[in-house]
Length: 458
Image (tube, rainbow, N blue to C red):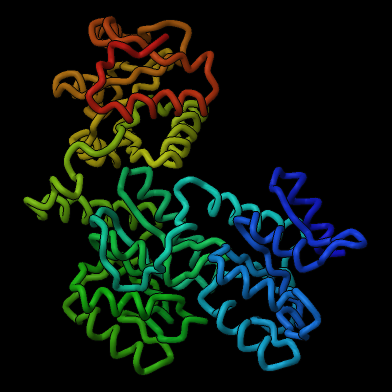
């Protein structure tokens, strides 16, 4: 019943499925193998007896072993009291423990509804079948492996409590809005948490440690991968920025974790106090450290991409509609792998960050609502952003979102500058195109770094 209901829900959401139900006269082994040979992903519904080896034919024991051998991604769904399942018989228990190991993320079907489980399976399906997925990668990566350029901040924390996970995700969103490149080890069901962490650490220039009480403990049940992450930091001498969320240095229950924390978090180390600062202030502090670290890197800046490396999203944020349009566009562009920075220079608290964002921008996207380019007297307003882009030969991508182009703000200075800068630049018509189509047009331009921006079509 459960599997039939899940099949219906997945197919309703356009996920192709196969459930072995051979017709009379068909060979069940051949039908099952044929289904697995065509599969990109296998969902293992782990009731208590899942994986039992009975010797009666091609059963769950054989399906699991076959999928593992063929490197088919496996999404486990826990539906029994014990995980991994412990079926009768030694062979089944041993194989389950080997393949459905602790580091593989599973969906807990004992605490989630059918619809919630379906949503988790669908999330994994989308990731595993996307063109950027590592599903076909032959060799798994271990924490400590190298092999790619160092380009982001690795965000490290204990995520066994939902409140801590939400806090770190909130700081990540704020850093992303500043244009700060980040990586959060947030695997989907079916992924190996150690492989995901290793991939992120291999490309990290520094690590931010969200230091809750159990941070750095050797028990993965309480502290996730933080013990291994701290070991990597210590051995590779990677810069670490601690965020104090409890006793500092953290004192997990195990002696091994305490000793390692003491080695990395020395008494002289200054921590950002997350107990007295809110997420916005914490994100601002991390962003300032990142920019200073990038500048101090000297000759390393160029190869790591700290020069002109992102799209600066420029707009007026004097209404919720404008703010959310730009945020939605940032989300779509980020999903396409295009680094972005949202300028909010009219906000005095963000003015310095806005200027730093411009200095590292490869191009400026101007979201041309009616009042875009208005001179407000603030150094970081859209008038100043557009002026900077023009004077420093930044590429400008205008998005028409008002009735007139160029935009005609209320003041004469803004109208004059808009007329001079935009008169030779054609625009992307955001009034006629859907948001996804606008993002797709921007991506086409981004993918042609030396293109002439006077060729943007109307």
